[in-house]
Length: 156
Image (tube, rainbow, N blue to C red; front, side):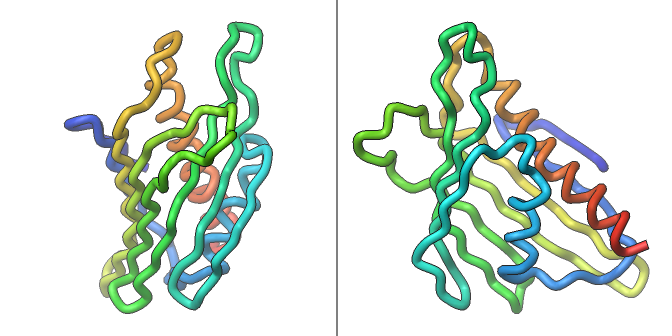
């Protein structure tokens, strides 16, 4: 996996040995294989090309008084262009946890020579409590590393 950081944006890319299909089942897989990081998820407003998802992360650094972090995304996937876009929604009312304002784009590229999964993670305003902005980015990267490892184990 190749990881670059530039302009508050992480760019991950990794080759995949076989072709995959970017659809809802691919998205569910991302969440299912990351139960060690994700505490709770709720999916709603499901259509053929979009849905809304609430993801509550495990409570990291609770002993230091940090708030639980959550992500709340509108997710749209474009099957023709093989792209998935996770765009942060407005914070939930009456939620005492802290919203992570991220923008994530997943793009699948396949050629005759190679298949690649490209992931861009834009940190819009990661909270700066205890220097956790880097830690939160590492959690998101770990989610996609888990995906890569799973895909490689299943496709080879």
